[in-house]
Length: 254
Image (cartoon, rainbow, N blue to C red; front, side, top):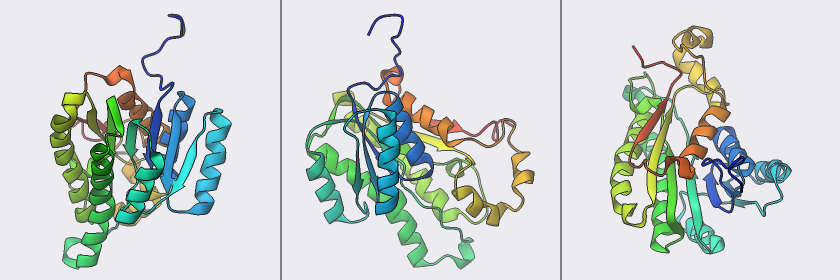
């Protein structure tokens, strides 16, 4: 690569795992990684959407991309996935997650357990399985999708907010544990992004147009978050670890 075309943001010759890679931020991130030269190992649960996402990845590059079916809340699926991966990976983007809406006074134990299992337990236990087998290469990067909900109060999303705040705290500790191998661990905290989840959010905050007025730069696009993930995966961020990048279009400036 000559000096005229070199960019520290490239992902050439890197294997990147993206969970939740069949829709929304996960799909946008998987496509962005492929566009920047990575071989993508996408993970999802829906066979039809996995097949569709794989076709989109193949249209980006001729790398041997894979889309793998797994429920990351299940130990047997995590073990099967790690065994299939085999060789080292250079980065992981934990994008899979759910947002279940409920005010605290109506919250159920099942609600709490489901959100915790998907948003916290699954990414941390997958990371553990990869680290135990030394499958994260030296100078690798771990990226976790948190949320602006971890930083501000929003009615009806207490369980979700709590899981996203937990990720931020856990990733700080994880960063210190893996730094000896120069592996980095960071979070992204996006605010409202124009994905299918935006419709669910509308049931809590009401008019989206009114909410849009709180964002000086408007709502985000999936590509905005995907580009930030590429930055954290690439050598351009090699001096950044244990931190959280807030992406909110200016929502929390004032």
